Length: 204
Image (tube, rainbow, N blue to C red; front, side, top):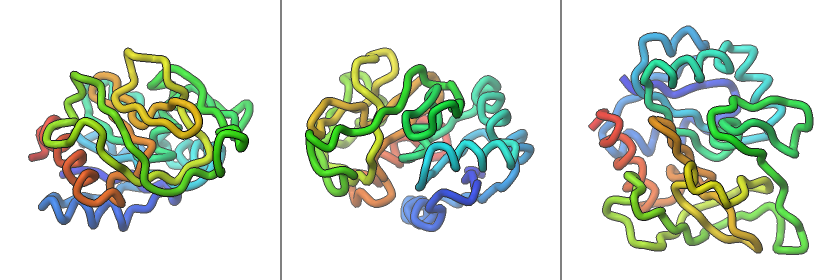
């Protein structure tokens, strides 16, 4: 069964409802040990980088997630769940991320647009992105964020977007994918993207 990581900061209800619409059951888990028998999991996230990493560590996920991926598991991160996959964030200086995706999360310059970015924005998939099946070249997704992953790392960027500056709307590395936008709030495009991940990972 698909595991939904609960570290007391993710919008589990919205994600679970989106999965239900796709005909997929999920099991919330609250401790890193619960990943040992998992094959596919989702790491949602709403809130600050520092609090998120603190909660992951307290529940044993900060060590369990890299071990899970190294063992061949599939992971899908959402919003803060994407940012925590990186090495660090300007939001919490000195706090280490999971280090799955190289790079640092940075804050939007208010001179470039109203921060946080809230609302619909175009996202452009890389040509070989496995999550793009059935989606138009530049589809709209729903964003809520003040911090972002800079563009410029083609080996990990799966989807790009623009808000005063180019940024990574989604990243991917091996069996790990993550989106800055909220697919569970992005209507048909979001459900299509989630279905693509569930298909690639063998859930569907």
